[in-house]
Length: 339
Image 1 (cartoon, one colour):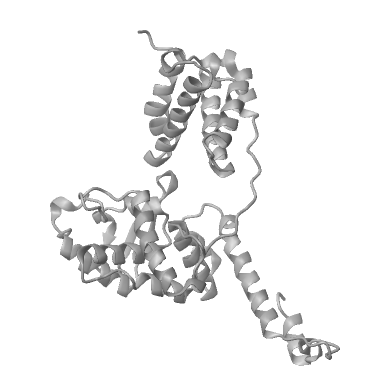
Image 2 (cartoon, rainbow, N blue to C red; image 1 turned 120 degrees about the vertical axis):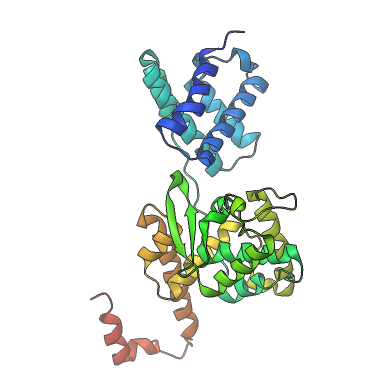
């Protein structure tokens, strides 16, 4: 059977253009692939257009808008997930418009479909005390417990994303002083993160037990499952949730209702900021391209300080003015802030 123009260009786009020309990472390409898988399922199940007959003419504004509605209503995708899928569609439409100039107008119509505004969720994080309790729960008398302890501690200490944690190889770890971890982030951008002495000792013990110092294991994943395969994001989330439920049973008031690996990243950022670490350094640790992305933690920290001030000042009905308004020394200090 002769391939359709859609299948021909989709193969070239995923297998050649994205990795070779655009230089996107494997994880990003996999995300694009997943989107097209869903799109093909939609065409087959809803529009009754089978994959082998799917043509570029079917990749139009009307069908794509229907696909986005289907994602939210039938697949129960969040607005955030819907927007991620649409961003991939926009990129492919731009590519097709260049390959087929005569289709540029239709592709511009596809690209004109707007991202949907989403309500920003409150960032979840946990206190240093709560984090210390959670990290102490893995049973270090067992092999699995020692792995979990090293893995969760490293995820917190480095503030890395869960996929970045899964992708760490043995060769990315430097135990010798100064100890560091090489993290490969979005767009294959590499950052080197210093590792504290206690974390370095924990990693060294874990790697020795696993025999990861052998030359032929240098390209092996640092953390693996029971089958010896690289841990996945779902695997890490499962392990984290196991200890989270244990911690919550011990002290429910210290933890949110749910937790995710990204909560570790948020928590590390807040803890660093509270310790006086400059926002620029936190940005570099997290691998943010823009400082504006990191500034969200500064806003959260300011809100925490404001609430702490409110709790520290008790106002009774008999008081005409809060004490801080009549304290001249305090007023002078406050008026000098920001100068």
